[in-house]
Length: 80
Image 1 (cartoon, helix red, strand yellow):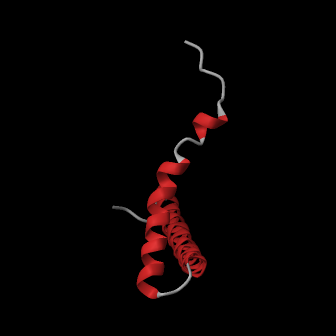
Image 2: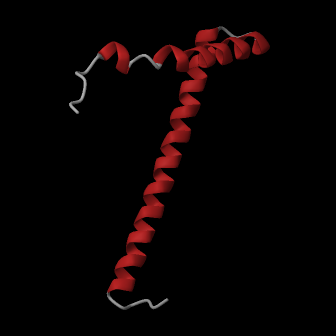
Image 3: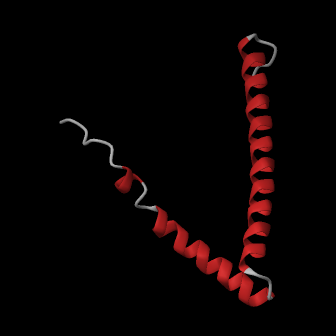
């Protein structure tokens, strides 16, 4: 069974479904803080970016530790 051709409208159809709760959360934050929606959105983007960077850094450290333990086990330096 062949795959249907790529349809960009169908591929991006999930956009409005995801965007509406984000818009509602930004409006709620703006209404409860008295700050403009654009400022609340900018703060949310900065906080999300910092959390993403920390998460990526943590995942890289865990992967490196697991790789080091696997190599040490493979060479027989560590026995379990």
